[in-house]
Length: 417
Image 1 (cartoon, one colour):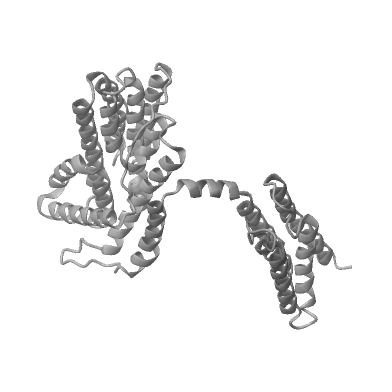
Image 2 (cartoon, rainbow, N blue to C red):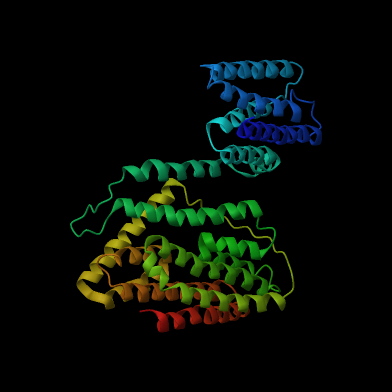
């Protein structure tokens, strides 16, 4: 007897049995009326799929005929079961059809591929409750944002020309749009994380994921909130410092995506600065009163068309300014421009420097300019905390910046080359 035939027959029975068992367990725990098939039925469907594919090597169109038969059977089962069940879905019937194809794949492809598909099917079937929970959480505008992201990535990006369109050779719409997708993607991850985890869990979650969206916005919001909860200065300091710690990580990711060789120089400074900062945050955590203070952040969606176009304009303008300054004023002009640009936005200047350092800008100048942009952006956050918050919060946050950004800057000074 053919050992491969026996192996695939048994595997088809096992895969069908597992998928059918999941359907049965779902019916039991959901307290629903029993559907047309369970573990035994699905085992037979998977075996029928394999045998149909096996017989097709001897009898032409046998597999095609079997597919039609199983399709008619599932349609009939759906109609019969839906007559007395107005809430009847079609998941089980489609799962049975996929199970039939999984069995057939054992003949046409590697067994591992059938196992892979079966695991994916089990995963999708098993997360129904989570999906329904998320459906209640996701707002319409957030779904629109996901569609906008796909439009920006798979429709707009491919049609943009990957070449300079200006006489100075500085404006490349394709590369600018990649920058927009990168920054918006990181921000959107933080935005969705906050939506799913919620900010009611406290300032730690809000600060950590809020830092992916905007550490400056987190600093402003929490500094203001201190006036409402004056006894929790350390709690708000933890939120602000967690958000600021994400700035270094975010900067490293942005440089690595645009210019990996340039990013290698920042690995040690970012690791040292982040680790030092987390040591200080740990100190704050163990010496402060545990308190979940609900936050009310209202971040703008980074995948709204207006926001995306505005980011594109900022990135394009920053590229042109840095390029012109580098051409006519040299390294000193780039450093000054980077320091000033950091007051407004750190993403645009970091990505612009990373891009230009691949062509016209001295990589060492780009490295120092990135450090200056991070330092100037940190100064802005300190000023905002001082003006909007209280002195006790400013002292705690100031110490963090001295520890984290200070060690980052010193390490960069001695390691960059």
